[in-house]
Amino acid sequence: MAEIFDRETLLDLTVNVIPLGIILFFVVAFVLIDPFEGLDFYGRVLQMGLLAFPFVALAILTYVSGKAIAGDEKRAEVYFQGQATMDDAPTKHEAEAEIEAELADDAAGDDADAEADDGDDEDATADESATDGS
Image 1 (tube, rainbow, N blue to C red):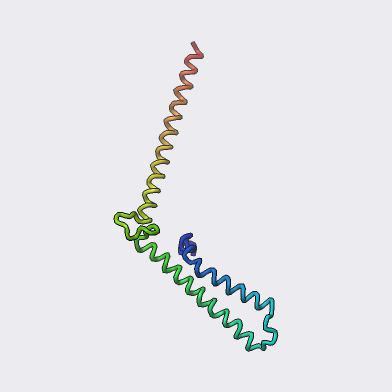
Image 2 (tube, helix red, strand yellow):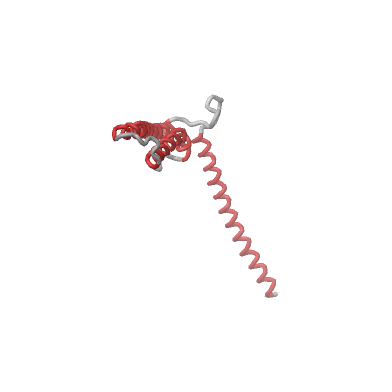
């Protein structure tokens, strides 16, 4: 499930999660505080059904749309906001690959610098011991 719903997909689904929270609030409020004291059993079932049915339908819709959004992001080209109609606009995947390549180059450069620094330290130590022995 963590693979399907990444951070950006969850942000897209927030528009459905907020109404789910509102419906849950009213379910809890109507269970704890009985504003309609004269309701019989069938009235209470109707009241909770009018809250439960939209909640379940919206939860299913949210899950299905989340899978569709995540699946489409894996299959199709994804552009940054406002750049889909621009000529030569990089896709999100291209930009991420470029950033990863730069990070890998930086890491390789840092390793080479560290090895060069280690070699300089050994030369400095050899120079100090040579001058101390004279």
